[in-house]
Image (cartoon, rainbow, N blue to C red; front, side, top):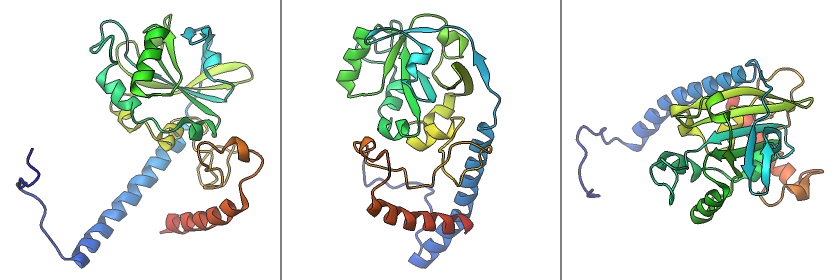
Length: 254
């Protein structure tokens, strides 16, 4: 593809003031879209839960594991069914190109973990092959081997998808499922949290009463510093985040 090739039917060239005016018209629609997305996430948080009463088993780096083990002690779990196994294009050197495309976009997991949420990948490939693939591709997410009907029971035996779970009083519940083009948006901490029952857990969100929430910006951190600031954020960051929160509130009113 030549970089200097001309596009047919491209938009017109305009002055700076006309460009700003066009951008501001689009911004109205952008804000409407953002608020609609937030409203959809709020509806997700009110979806009914489905009890998971089957003892699903997985293989992990250290041996057999239960679905509960995949939570790694956190409250929420997102399991992405990735296709890496015999019969899938790319085997044994690579996983599915689409699944691999998504894996390359996964944000640093420390930020998701800070919201009491674990992301895990699951395939039918043996652990030795999964470890080899992760090392080759530079992926860090926990990745388990499916050993039973988990994929068929949760709609991901023939196609990729994210299943969302929460644990409460020793029980596990399925709360949401997203697949097909919905998977295209996955990768950022925000989009992962938006499909969970607790959401981003920030005070501006429309969540049921009693759900955990903290002020926006305050909990953000460097990915290697969350444990150091578990008690309280750095005072300097409080000052900076107060300004950010104020701007957030003003922007939301616009």
